[in-house]
Structure formats: structure tokens, C-alpha cells
Image (cartoon, rainbow, N blue to C red; front, side, top):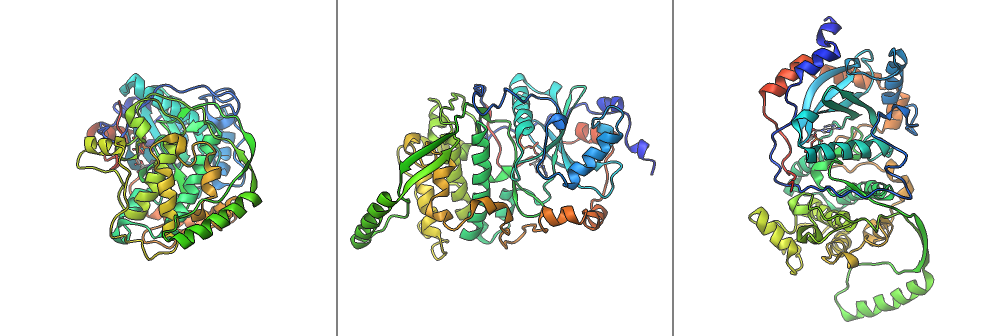
Amino acid sequence: MDVESLFPSESDLDLSFTSCASNTSTDRTFTSSSARSSLTLSFNESRGLSSSSGVHRPHRKSDPHWTAIHAATNLSPDGTIHLNHLKLLRHLGSGNLGRVFLCRLKDYDDSATFALKVIDREALTNKKLSHVMMESQVLSVVDHPFLPTLYAHLEVSHYTCLLIDYCPGGDLHSLLRKQPGNRFRVDAVRFFASEVLVGLEYLHALGVVYRDLKPENILIREDGHVMLSDFDLCFTADVVPTLFKRFSSKVGPTKKNWLSCLEAVFRRRKEISDEEMTAFVAEPTAAYSRCCVGTHEYLAPELVNGNGHGNGVDWWAFGIFLYELLYGRTPFKGATKEATLRNIASSRPFGFPESDVAAEENGVAEVKDLIARLLVKDPRRRLGCAWGAADIKRHPFFDGIKWPLIRTYSPPDVPGLMRKKSHVSHVRGGGSSFSLSRRKSLGKRWSWRGIGNFIKGKGSDSKLNKKISM
Ligand SMILES: Nc1ncnc2c1ncn2[C@@H]1O[C@H](COP(=O)(O)OP(=O)(O)OP(=O)(O)O)[C@@H](O)[C@H]1O
């Protein structure tokens, strides 16, 4: 087939995109506007909204995605990626801001695939435009295995197009629904939670408060590892990375009988005397926003109360996230969204299910203890708020995890989880046999014009757990 007929010029593209904004309801997320500028680990200072082409990334130079991108830019007359370098393969989904397509580079059939997020700026309100800016800002600075790589940022007419990693494994919410009892075993919870924790730790070190952690926003890469997505509700703050020295004891599950309690006290005393700890903390503890944003069931009490919130909202959401992975539902969910918010705001503590489906599994006491320490309504007493991920990583639930090697752990053997060999072997093998077989199964390919028609003619099919905007 004549390739050019599939790829009209970019001016054709401009005409074909008439309505990119989805009319998805915004019933599960709130929004914010009060981003604070970064001072120490600079977020706004050194990086802008421009294309990622000038940024020295990534650390995996042999990654086939970058190889293809570099080859395409080398051949491009102006040394940059354009939309007509891309071949759209299919529509992946729609969100509040735009639509996402699977694509690959036109002249590199055996190269990796990408996801292209297309946002029609003309169809968005000013508030949503600020979210687009936030998302592109965050994408333009992050470089982490559990976060998306921004391969190109294209501004074409009134469209903003972000070329990022494609995650063929879907999202964690869909995966959760494929599990027996709609819940993960404790070991699977530990795997996903560890990776998400490391991703959050990295974001916080950059001064980025995520504010939209939920299983729907955790995408699964082809090797079964996670990728946090959706950064439009983030806000930024100053971070002063600091080396702290302190005395500390390990936190752990509460023992019921008094003898165990006594033992625990003695053990704790010993630990306190033994454990003078030095910790590197890069946590945006001064982060502050008054805008209520997020997803109902994941909103922290301070967000619901509207009295201002900071980094602690992510650690609260991390507690809800653990709970949902473990039990298949969130702890404060009520019959209506208002009831959910009332449950969150009330002073009543949450409870664990009476018939605990996880009761027999190793590590359940630890994960429940961790959840209880995260779902503390007063953020000043919530685990993570003062010391960030450093404190959470030390919780017994994560005992034995070698954090620097986290990327090398094998994903759990759970139904429906894609577990293609890691990117390392993919890189070495050049990826050609995989790409070939996968290409065959991609089905219908889209032209830019075809997608324009699709956008005009069809509604959206966005995610189950929706954001709320206020
Ligand atoms: N990198 C990706 N790889 C695979 N699928 C993706 C990728 N990014 C997005 N998707 C799919 O496209 C859908 C829309 O994503 P998008 O980020 O635009 O919206 P969203 O996640 O609903 O967030 P929001 O509405 O807050 O912008 C997602 O639900 C997901 O199914």
C-alpha cells in the first residue's frame, strides 16, 4: 500500500482533527490550580514545555525506541520528529484531555511501538489546558523505569501530541478484575506496591505531588512491570533533599497478647538503642495546595475538607491503593459519591473486612498494619508525610526487598499479567522477531484522516474510575 496515502501532510492532519476532546464525564476526579514553583530540585527552573529532543535521556541508550527515534530524527530535514513520521495502528482509549493511539515509526517496521496522546487544545477549557501543561511538564522531566518516557512532544496547529511508551498490558484496575475474588494475593500486592512506591518516591524527589494514584493509572508494560500514568492533576513544590540522622525503630503489626507486647517493647528498646539511622529524604514536605482534586474514593480527608493539603495526599492514596489491591474494593466507598466523601471526612476509622479473604496468606498482618499507618486521617501522623518513601520502605511488609534491584524482580504469576522477558533481552535481540509477530496481530491500521473521522463520529470509551473536576 502506498504509504503516503496513509499519511497525508500535516496540514491534512490539522483539518482531519476537528474534535479531539472527549466528553467523558468527570465524576471521579477533582482539580487544582495552585502549583508552587520549585526551588531546590528544580522542576520549572531548568526544564520547559519544549520537546524532549534536547534532553539527554535516557540511561538505556540501546533501547530500540530511542534507536528508532534517533534514526528518524537523523533523516528528518530539521532533525526533529513530525507527525508524518508516525503510523497510527489503533485507538487505545480516551481520557479527559484527549485520545491515545498505538503507533510506530513509519520507516521502522521492526522497531518498538509507542503510544501517542493527542490533545485538541481548542476543545479544552483553560483549566484543562493547565492540566495539559502540567502533564507535559511532568513528562518532560521524568526519566525512570516506572514512569513514561516522553520521546517527542509535538505541537501541530491546535493539537498537542505526546509520544510516550506503549503499555500493552492494560491497567492494573483491569488486571485486578481478572483475579479470583477481584483481588491480588499478598505477594502480588507487594510487587505492585513496591514498584509504585519507587515511582512515587521519584516523583516526590522532583517535587511533584501526583494526586491521582489509583489502579487505573498504573499501566502494565510488556515485561509485567508498572508505569505510572496521567500527570495532569499533579502539583509541584520545593524539595530540599536532606540527610537526616535519627533514632528509629522498625514499625510492625500490633501484637494482641500482653506477653507478645512485652516482648515487642524489649525488642523495640534494643532496636532504638541499636538503630541510629541516617536517611536521605527528598520529600516535598512544604507542598501546599488548596484545590480539591483527585478521585473520590482515593481522596485524603484533608482534600475533602478543603483546608489545604500537601505531599501526604499521595501517601493516603497509597494506603487506599494497597487496600484495593488486597480486597478488590476501597475502604471508604459509600452508596453514593457524597456518602464516600462523608465516610472519608468523618472521624470514624476505617475497618478491614470481617471475613478476611487474605487471612491465611503470608504477610497479611504486615500489609494491614501498613495500610492502617497510611490511612491515618491526620496527615501529621500519617506514615510517609515527614520522611517520604524512606519510612514506608522500612515497614516490615517490604522486608527483604532489595530496593536498588527492584527492576530485576520477576512480576508475580497472576492471571492475565503480561510477562514478556525484560527490556534488557529485548534490547539485545533487537526486538525483531517479537515485533514481527506482534505486528501481525495489530489488525486494522489507522490513517490520520481515518482517525479524524473516528474522533468526529464516535463517543469515548474511557476508564471506569473517573476523575472529578471542581
Ligand atoms: N501509554 C499507554 N499505553 C497503553 N494504553 C494507554 C497509554 N496511555 C493511555 N492509554 C489508554 O488510553 C486511555 C486514555 O488515556 P489518557 O491518559 O488519555 O486518559 P486517562 O488515563 O483516562 O486520564 P485523564 O482522563 O485523566 O487524562 C487509558 O485509559 C488507557 O487505556
